[in-house]
Length: 471
Image (cartoon, rainbow, N blue to C red; front, side, top):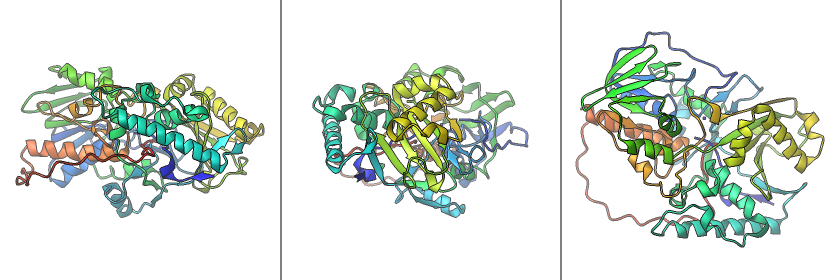
C-alpha cells in the first residue's frame, strides 16, 4: 500500500561547500562601505540582500564558503543528474515567493513526489499493516499535541504512547530523526507542534540549490570571505574579514545557530549571553544524504519512490529512489545514528547504505552500485549541521533571535517560529530582517497603524504530522 504525502512526515534539511560543485568568486575588491552588510549567502542572506537592493540601498553579502546557497547546494558534477546535497524541497506554493521567482528565472518547478511506502523485511507492507502504522502516527502526534498545551515544555519522547507495538521505532524515526535531524528526546513538544504545515512540497528539476544560486546572481557577493569579528553599536557596524573591513549602518547575520554558538565570529562589545544561549538551545540536528548510482533499477522501484522500513532501532533510514527517472538513489540518515555514522566518514556511510538496502532488496545490491557520494554536513565548517530544532523548554529561543541588538539583526530558518527547518522559513526571515534594517536606517517608512485584529484561534494540527524540510 502506498501512502500519500499527508500520511507521514518525510524529513529534510535547512547544508556547505562540497567537492565537485560549481564555484563562483567575486572578481571585484571588497567594498569598504555599505548601507547594510549581510553575512551569509544562504536562502536568508539572499532574500535579505534582494530586499535591500529593491529598496535602492547599497548592500554587500559576504560568504565564508566558495559558493552561494548555504544549505541549498546542487551538485552538477558528481553524477549525470543534478544532486541536491542539502535541501531538496520548498513548501506552501500558494504563498511562497520563491516559486514565482523560479519560474521567472526559467527554472522548472513541480510537485515533489507523493508516493511513499513501508518495507517490512523484503516485502512491502500490506494495506492493514500500513493502516496500523498510520494509526500509531496519529496516536503519537496527538500525544505530543496534548503535551504542548501543558504548563511545561517537555520532550516529545517523554509523552510518546507506550502501546505503539511494532511501530514504535518507526514512528520515532519519522517524527524525530527524519523530521528534525534529532531523536525525540532532544525535541521540544511545543516547537514540534508549532511547526507549520509543510505537506505541499515543491521540487525544482534543475535542483533547489541551482534555484537559490540563481537568485543570488545579480547581488554584490564576496565568496570565500569569512567574517571573524563584528564591532557594533547603536549607530553602525564594522565587519572584519581577511579581505578587509566593511563599515555599514546595519548588519544582518544569517549564519547557522551552530556557527553562532561556536564563537567563531567575535563581537565587540560582546553581545548579551542570552543570544548565544538561544543559539545553543536551537542547535542543528544531523541529516545526510548517501547517494548511490545504480543503473538498471536493481531495486525494482518506480520513479521518485520514497521508502521507509518497519524498524526496531534508530539504525534506519529513508530511501529516495530513482530520482527524476535517473539511476540515482539517496539513502538519508539522521538523528543520533546519522550523526555517529557521519563521524565515521564517507566509506562507512556508503557501507551502511548498501547493507541496509541489501537487507530489504537482496544481496546483489553491492555489485549494482557504480558510483557513490555522501554528504557530511556536521563536518562542514561553515554550517556544522542540518536544520535547527529546539530542545525541551527552549521554544522561546526562536523569538530571542528575532530581536535586534543595536545595529545587528539575525535571520535564518532558526529564527522562524513556525517554518523553522525549511528554506521557506529562511527566506521569509531574511526578508523580515531586511525590512527591519531598512526601517532602522530610514530607507522605508513605518506603515500606518492597522486596526487591531481579533485574537487568533490556535490552529489544531491534523493528526498526521506536518512535513519539515531539508531532505
